[in-house]
Image (cartoon, rainbow, N blue to C red; front, side):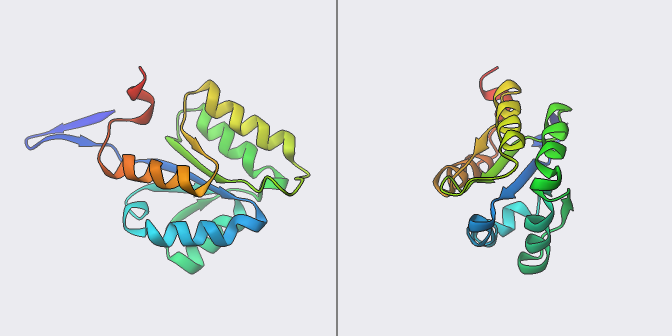
Amino acid sequence: MTTITPEGPLPKRRRIALIAHDHKKDDMIAFAQTHRAFLSECELLATGTTGGRLQNEVGLNVQRMLSGPWGGDLQIGAQLAEGRVDVVIFLRDPMTPQPHEPDINALVRACDVHNIPCATNLATADLVMVALSLAQPDPKEIHA
């Protein structure tokens, strides 16, 4: 959704969910530091521990959900299904089994069902950030 101003269209404030498995949290912090200027202009939500580290170590304003294993992934999935998330950056650890794997699969499936971009590695996350920073239209509207 775009607001029209006398100067032209103004892209809406992006809503980005940030999630990282334990072995990927340091990568998420480095990613957030790299993209801090852009992320600070977005509405951010994150699972509990990831959100806490983003607040404390990067200085970002983050709405924190529960930790992933305690239902945080599902909370973000619910926000996504209600149209409150535009992009998911989910740095998954493919080498470590997760006790809440069904929740993770449900979140990724919700991204697919609702046509929400979901970056699951740093290379894809960086590409998504570049696309968003170029003031592209709502990512869901690109394929509409």
